[in-house]
Structures are given as C-alpha cells and as structure tokens.
Length: 370
Image 1 (tube, rainbow, N blue to C red):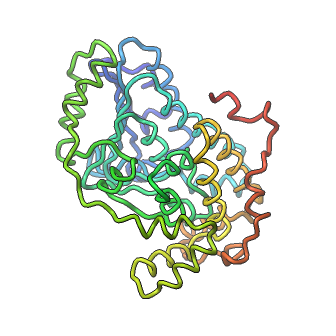
Image 2: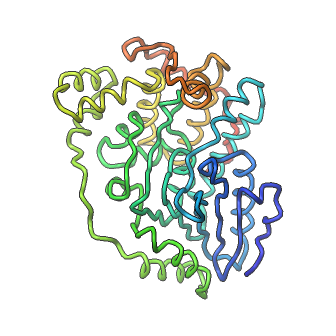
Image 3: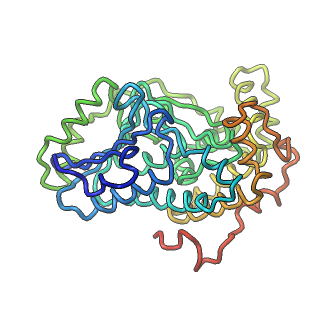
C-alpha cells in the first residue's frame, strides 16, 4: 500500500485517500452528515486529484462514501447547506470560495485524463451528483437514491446540473430539476445518469479487487472494468410520455395548468404537489437554466451556474435560499415564506436577473475553465 501525497492534509479525517496497486482510492468520510461536502473537503479532493493526475503510479481513481455502518451505504447528500446559512448570516466570504472551488472540482472530474469510478451507493444528491456525474464509470445499486432537490431550499440544480440534466432523454431533465424527484438505479440507467448496476453486496469485493490488479496503463483499467461491470439486464423502464408532454410545455404556468386539468390522475396530483412546494421563483429559474444549458459546453454551463449562485445569495438573509434552508433544515418548520409566493406572480424580469453576469468576462472566477 502506498500513502497518498495528500493524506496529511488538514481535512484527512473527512477525505481518506490511498494508492493501492495502480489505483487511487478516495473515501468521503463524513457519515454523520451523509458525507455532505464542506469547503475543506472540496479542497482536499482537488488537491488529491491534481496530485494523482500527474502521478505515473496512478492509472485510475475511484470514489466512494462512508456509511454510518461502514464503507458504502451512502455516497454524498450534497453541499453543507448549514454552512451556507451560517455564512450568509455572518457575511462570510468563504461562501463565494465554496462555489467557485466546487465547480472547479466538478470540471476537473469531468475532464480528468484517467478513468474514474463513482460507487453511487445510497444517497447521491446535489454535490454528490456533481462528483459522480463527471466520472467515466457511474456504478449504482439497489440502494441508490438519486436526486437534484435544490429547488426545495430556494436554489437550483447546480454542480453542472444544467449540463447533465439537460442531456437526459426528452424533457426528463426539466422534470428532475423542477420536482426534485428521487430515482433509483433503473431510472438512473434509463436516463443516462448511471453506467452500470451491481448488487451492493459486491461493492467491497470490487473495491478491493481494483487495488490488487497490475494495470499497465489507463486502457488496461478500462478493459478490466468492461469485463467486471457487464451491463445488467434492463429493469422496468419508466414511461416518460407524460413527463415529456408536461415538461416540454413552454413555461411553468402552462405545466401547472396542464397538471391541474389532470387532477383525477395520481401522477398529475403528485407532480402538481411537488411543484407547489419549492420556491416559485427558483422553479422558473431552474427551467430556464436547463433549457439554456442544453446548448452549452460544460465550462460555459458552470460559468452560468456560478453567476446564478451569486444572485441566489445576493439579497443575504432576504434571499430565497436563506429562507429555504431556514425552513427546511435549520428551524424545520417546513413553512418557507417564498417571495413571490405563487408561480403565477413570477415575472420574466425576475428570472432573467439570475442570468446577468455579475463579473466582466476577464474577472469571472471560472474564466480559466476550458
């Protein structure tokens, strides 16, 4: 076993790393918080990946999360939103660093020159999707619970969510972004958000086997994984015709109206309820985001999302994000006071304001992404 060059980082307890054989192994190790990402974790991950990118010993990188009962069982529930709330209250500039550095990490993973694997066992949401969706091998299990639920707390599906959700088939991306629907392994495979399914009981053996192979190069890693991760037989597929019919409509008001016309249908009732709970403003913003991102390269999407996130917190304690986190996570009264309170009251001008660039191009914090 070879020690990682970054095991001595100040955040070593929350990000465990090692090199075994030809593979670098990373474990998100904050199980009590479902491995929610802190700024120090983001920095440790980035440092590790940059070191291994140019390390001839390392031919591939694998990610997993630590569950409460041991390895696996939970991947990552997202970013540390309690930190977001506290940072807004204290006017902490580290909040700006968090998003700039997280999106830079997302880009690094998407463009990593060596094979990468994410063991997407258990909860994979928000920032966990930001890490896993950039990997070459996205491995799901019967326990996978995958979602981008940001609109529920007054945010939008960031971490390149615009990029990977907009590339789901049909209008599934809009559906997942607006409703925050939690999907399992079969739907993730169907929607292009996962590559292979394995039984959770096999994860530890696969993790260990990766570290005892002798891989001459990255191609050898990929060839071995192709043999190990054989495509599973197709599970039950979701009928997406209703999703496309509703979420392909031109705007949110039309979607809501169409769902109201089908209130006798259980799916329509459930979907309408899902659209009535999040921030009406951020629902509209998220819809615009997905549709813009469909025609964007990864780096451009991340720059757009960085602009949007700056606007999300621009009003401080009066922002939708601060209120959503307060209601859902801090006070837990589940009674956010959204402004405006209804979808019908959101104007195009309110939405477009989120896409105005707060920085000139030469000063954009993500200007160096290619």
